[in-house]
Image (tube, rainbow, N blue to C red; front, side):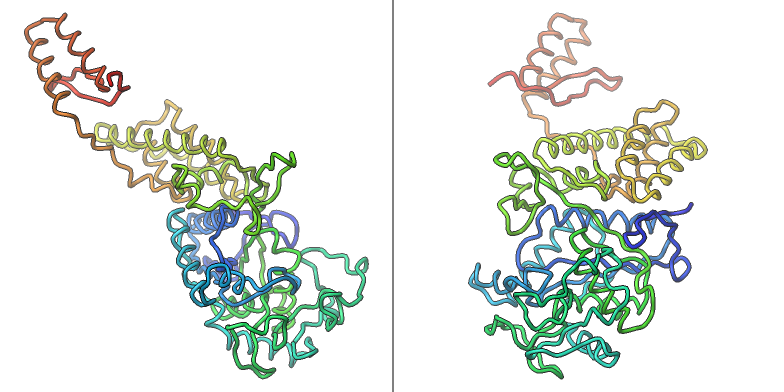
Length: 478
C-alpha cells in the first residue's frame, strides 16, 4: 500500500519513493545534552518513532541515524546568546564533558521508557570533528565561505535558492550587518568554525586549518548524516523550530558542498507541545529555559507511566499543536489502562478460541494501514483500534491478533501484558472455603452472610464449576 508523507519542502503530501528500492535512510535531529529533555522535546522523538515504525510496517529496511549535540553551542540559532554546555556546567559545577555524558545517558533512559526504537547509529558531534572540518574545507574550495575576525562564515548570498525550506522572503529582509556580529556580510550568514567568540574559557576546542576552535552548530548534522547515509538520502526530521534556521542552513551548506540536489528528498517536522499559562490566559510552547519545564521524571513523580504520555501524544496529529494538561494526561492514562485490561481479557479468552479468521481481520487491518500511511494519522488509527475492541464480528482471537499487529506502530508492548497475579489473604481464603462447604450443604443464608463478609474485606467471590474464584473489590472494613 502507498505511503504518503507531508513534505515541508513542497508543503504537500507526497508519495514516499526512496532513493534505493525497499530501503529508507532516516536522519533525526537529536538532543543538545546540557539539560534533561522535556516532554515537548520528547513529543518530536515519539513522532519520529511512529514514522520509523510505519516504514518498517510497510516492509522498508530503515537505516536510522541520530546525532547527539555535545559540543558547545550558542542558545540562539543565529549565533547569539550563551553557550549551552557552559551554562549547564556552571549550573551544576561540573565540566562540560561530565554534563554531556550525564544528560546523554538521561536522554537514552527517557527514550527507552517511552519504548522508542533506538537509532541504528547514534553519533556524537565531538567524535566527528574531522568530518566537520573536511566539509568546511569543501565549502571553502567551492567558494561559499569567507573569513572574518578568525571565524569562518558561510556566505548565503552565493546560493541562489537559500531559504527555500522556510520560504524566506530575502528581498524583504535588510542585508545590513547584524548588530551582534558585525563580521557578517549578510544577516543570514552563519558561522561554520569559531576561533574567536565571546567565550574564551571554553573547554571544548580542537585544532583546525583556521586555528584552535570549535564548529558552528549547523555543520555537525550535515557532516554526520552524509558520513552514514551518503550525500543524498531520503528523510530528515525535527521540530518546526528547526525549519527557519537550522534545517535551512543544513540544506544550504550540504548542497553547496556536494552540488547534488536535492540533498534530502523528504523533510518532516513535528509541531510544538503547548501548555496553558493561567496568568496570561494563553498557551505557550514548552522550553528548557521556561518555568513550564516538565520531564518524564516529573510525570513519574505524579504517578504516571512514560507510556501514558506516549498514548497522550497520539490524540493529536503530529503536525498540529498539542495542548498539555494533567487532566488530559489522566484521560490518556485511564484509556491506556482500559486498553491493557481489554488485551489481557482477550488473551485469556484466546485459550478457548483458537481459530483465526484472517478474512474478517482484513477490513480492519486495511483501514488501520491506510490511516497510518496517510501521513501518520494516529488519532484516526486510535479510533480504529477501539472499533476493533467494540465490534461483535470478530472473535477474541481475531481481536488479539489485530491488536498485536497494530502495536507494531503503537509501541505499548501489548504482547507482554500478563494477568496480574493477586495474592489473596489467608482470612479471605478461609471464608471462601467455609462458604463453599455451606453451599454444598445448601445453607444459602449462611452462604450469603459469608459472601458479605468477604465483600467487606475488599473481595468479590464468584461460583465456578471447580468451586469458587476471588477478585478484588472495594475495601469496606477498616
